Image (cartoon, rainbow, N blue to C red; front, side):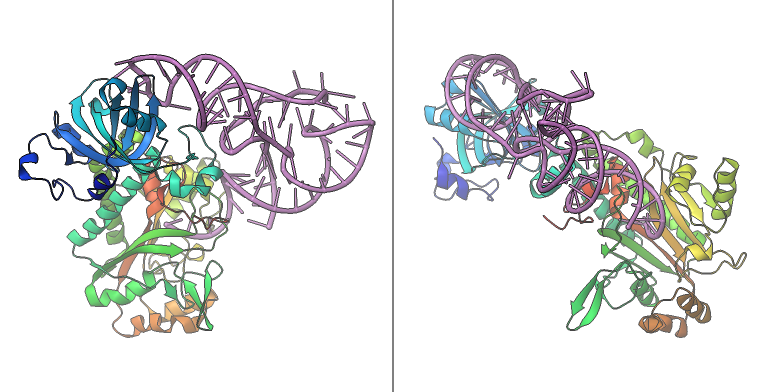
Length: 460
RNA sequence: UCCCGCGUAGCUCAGCUGGUAGAGCAGACGGCUGUUAACCGUCGGGUCGCAGGUUCGAGUCCUGCCGCGGGAGCCA
């Protein structure tokens, strides 16, 4: 019979016999709480697992309950002739996504998904699910995004978000191992950023505040304190972009290094991106398989990455028929043409000053250009990094702020950094969702963030 | 903001040159001892996005609006 209350109380008390049982009963066959991923190590043992009904197949005298517990998937088998009639009735009345606790002996079986299953001897319903809307079949994007809070449970979504979590951890590990100090930059800011027009504005006790679109300027301030710093958090762009590569709220990791020039910067980026890809290959093999990712393309991501200057790129593009003119920024068409020349990420460096942000350092060898780079991911995934050496000359920064028509008064403290011990420094920003969508092979960034914020979408 | 495409059952879709609404899945009920998105049978389920127009007659043709998707620009 279902154990109701005593069963539920034991959730969250892993591997301990319940209070009140005599030690004589805590013998070899007493069920222990277990996580599904550990079951292969417990053949022949009686275990209790808790989770959600992922799928349900009920026959006349046998029922299969596919249980998902967050660590894995296991099939519970209920044989009508071997359990009390009440347990059978409960099993066949279960619905997709009902939460349950089930107990039984773990046994290997070739026919079971994953190679082992649980012969169910006890079953408790924890929470019933009524008409779960997401079926194991095709759905439209709008339907799924409206139910994102439920869609998270689906296998490909779980896989993609696990890859994201692994990449996030790899980011922190990479910088921690290299003695970078994590500096948390503000999300609420005054009128400061890369350019106006794409800022989210909010009321701040009667004055305007803006959601940060980069932490870079604050990182530059922290650089003289710690030499090597990085920030990693959400950033906001009020761009009305409706493409597979845009979110209005996305996560960006931005390192900043004192006394590093543009070449040092690209070397760091190369090492960093290789580290993230390698980590996903090492730790997310199952997830990448679930996503159907061709890992051979990821294995090719090794140093050195090809480097091509903006000027060379324009020349090669024009040779192959493009009408791009020197001085114009590379558009999506040009970028994908350039990345198609290579099997791994490619740096395009030293763009025309007019196409880039005010803080980038003028190239002393060609003042029409600035010392900067984009990193384009292969396979059509586009730009994942933008980086540059920063302008450390006070007069030149001021001139660029005025030329770009930015609110000069907002940049007062930023200019101080050029007044009190200015220094060469470089950094970059890597877009997390774009990187994870590339690594996991998903076409759209909206699936690689738990709750995407898109144009016209603020819920769930 | 601009360009292209799509709105039909809870979901995914079909519906021809205009003639009055269909399938699969999901749900309910019944059957089945090994399923892997199980299978078989029965049943319920519709303001064809909204408004107007053409026509004897509009899911179908025309106009406008709304919503969604893809792309451009901009960016990570």
